[in-house]
Image (cartoon, rainbow, N blue to C red; front, side, top):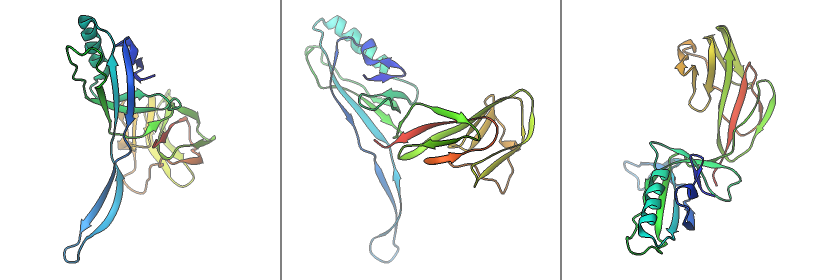
Length: 233
């Protein structure tokens, strides 16, 4: 099954036949600093770039009007304003966030053609498991082979002072947390209540956000820890 934003591809084109699915390998982008005098360059770091997903298909309907309707529906199904969840076969329920960057170029005559394609680009190139969660203070284990997505949620009936969260090494303390729905995003190092940032209550120095890591861990505090495991393949 190929699904984008939760909708199966066959809902847009019932007569579609998938020929193949190509998931590109991760792009490995090396950063190097050119040597001013000596030959060569000095290696600095390796960075993982984007990846693409190409779906090759045919729409096997020899009624040209009906075929064009399905192709038009397929384009509307695949397009989005930004990255959305794309589910592919044989991925154990994992999804990748991608945006369509290539549309098919059909022939008006060759209804049997199988070289049509849709292309998505994943600027975040990892596959993510469904979200999991546990209460703060409980031990949990994050699997995967890439940086997971981790966030903390809590609903406060009234404002609270000096609220802390810790993994035993890093401690996050907010001098004030207003009433409402709190979300602390560990990946982006942000905190908001009802979508409004509360980073003004974060100390200007001597504080560190808890880093999202793989393995067994415990985050103390009040609320719920959520995570999505990330996989390179």
